[in-house]
Image (cartoon, one colour):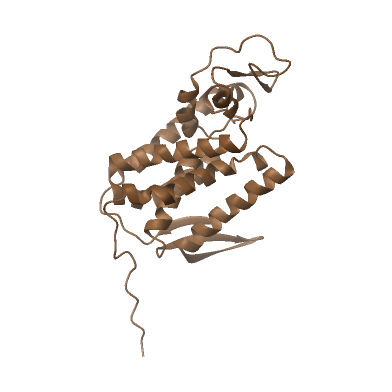
Length: 260
């Protein structure tokens, strides 16, 4: 399922949402300039250097590096020597929110951010929204680290912070309607779904895939940090009322008159 638009107009231009989209696009273009697609070549080094690695947080002061296409970290059994100088762990928590693993990754994330972020920004104002977004990203990092504290897999992407926006939107506007592109095997269709249903399906998928990854012993199922999504979403749903001060109460349009 891909959301295309919702039915809630914004009262003000979403400056912060647009700025976040631009920042992510610029960072992605810099990634491409540095080496191309994340996962191989010089760009893989960049994902280790600028992505967030849970091991570095739970083993404070130890750094990780890419050696022979494998991430190795100081303090691991059988590892000697020191890693090349890397950005601080706190820095990588925030830089990782600007990095993406490909066009589909960044395209999907920014589509969700645009559709749901503009209304959440409208409900809380620009500064509060930016703070909410960044705290959502921190919550995503916290849960992903708690689930797999020894992971040396670099975490990249804005999806944890964007998940906080989705959680906030669900609480604020559960009765909104979301025009959705739905794929049915080789066919597709467009339907309008209540926001509560769309977002419930989304978070249910994250929980299901995350638990499946734990059961199979995989650090990240399919290379996706599902628990980061869950952490951001839960934070957004729980914290939104502390940030939102201008919630639209009349966001459901009146029913259309029925002809006789």
